[in-house]
Length: 284
Ligand SMILES: [Zn+2]
Image (cartoon, rainbow, N blue to C red; front, side):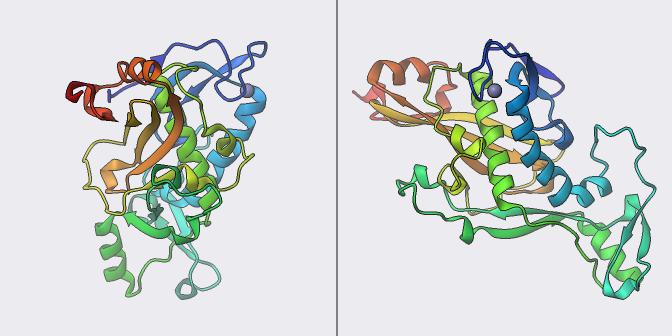
């Protein structure tokens, strides 16, 4: 996907609730606070933006706040970046230890997940999120230097936010699909999970169990594919955040396309290498 700011035209209604009579604000596919540069113009109404903002903040601040500060990620807040970050650990005593920001050995936690339930035919009632494994990625050199200097390993501070993380991935995947497809091209089965009306986000969000190699210089990778049969196919988004750090790759089942004509029509909008519809029409 392209580098630098990229804008996609508004579809004239809120992508979450369909409202046409409310003011629509721009929607970053990957949130601005996580380095997002791709923007859906006029895409979300204020009440819906309030819902998505909450789980975005859970991830950007509670889960990744310390890591984002240490690695210089941008923030909308005008406050200047701190010169030091305090580490509070048993070894640092009650005061904590102020460490220069460029040396702070933060880690960024992710969840390693199995494939989304909907992609492997699990019923909606099966919640696989208790099996998600916490993994950490960070700057190995900072960790080693810190250990050499202090004689003990760094202490990581973060909040466990699996549900918000899953909802954020679902939102990113949905927005990514809408950068290639239109509202109405598919039934957006991901919406109740994004908006919090359905709880089992592992039904539509998952990953591949192996860690993908780091992609230096690339902040995120996104893609859209169509997977299924000529009668019924799933729109599946690929999402990988902080690809430069060697992070897990995720899959989001965004929606469904039904009927031979529709599957063919929607498939023609997606890059041919991302269309896995069996039997392939060239084999019929
Ligand atoms: Zn809305």
